[in-house]
Image (cartoon, rainbow, N blue to C red):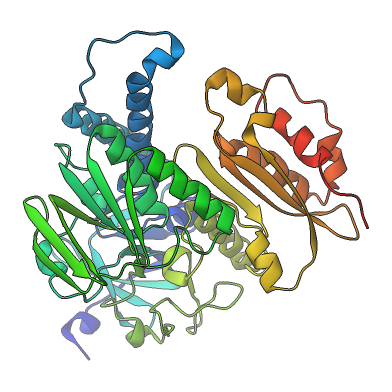
Length: 465
């Protein structure tokens, strides 16, 4: 038995390792129910979303959107003399929001009664976690129930020279004080596209390198093509089917990419090519918690791990890497701890890519429907069919819907357009309620709103053949 194991442990009803979306809500909720709860957090109170990911990145993206309006101000009848981007001020706005959110989280811990313990937590025995703070004495905690909510981190692969180049991840990109002269981005997925557009709008030259043959390659081809055209129209250089075999130099000074017939040189390098679960080095094997081949905690449909009384939620459990997915994980575990039988299988999972315009989808894409052999009727219209887009000068994009061939059930919805994520919510609710598409077609929406575009979309559904 180790020295840590020989100490007297402090006993809790519930221990939560990681204060991300699912973990913090479980901590707050169970503590309010009268249970003795401790939430262990290594660095970011509230997890990555309010500190270094979702909300800060959308803050930056909105600043870039405002900048784009300045550059195109004559289109709206407004003259300008000069436009200057102050990245230090952009960063300050983001930091202020993060600080405000941190205060909200600390207040929630205080009001709920959940104890927040800052430090690195690792299992040293069954249901026993040692917490080592940055300074001070470590503590030994034992919980009747334990929830793993350790999240994920940006992935750096083993490409020669990549780690030595000290590339930016989304974390460092959100802290830039100066506009990169030429930003090279590895990865044409969500993070890569969002940062490519934002940094280009701030004034950087941007080159996006994607190893697959098209951007967001899991989406439909018309979506990939529309996003490629968006990048090209904004002056973003895009290389697809490009694999980097070697990296030279240092990000922030000069960096060079070599591979597959390409040689690129830029001032900064941003890696946005995936994420790894935070499951290494926390003693899962000691606790009897198994992981998958990809390193995620192995869970069943109820989010139970292979160790009795230990649950896993969010990114580390292999759930879709969205904050809203983690929040639903919280609800599933909360109810199951109370004797429920909720599962993750079959749940509806929307997503939104926050380029400008946005890409939003819920349900089946055409690619998925074809792969699964599911027949469908397709309705597709340009965003200009929603007349509100013309008043905004935001006419790029389209909406499309997949309708069952025998019934009027909506199988899927995709929108690439202004406020696509907000429009999607209406369709998602109809899908969840099992309403036929005709309910949206025949609804009286306010004119002129973007939701009104759902009327021509669903009016264009082909009849049952």
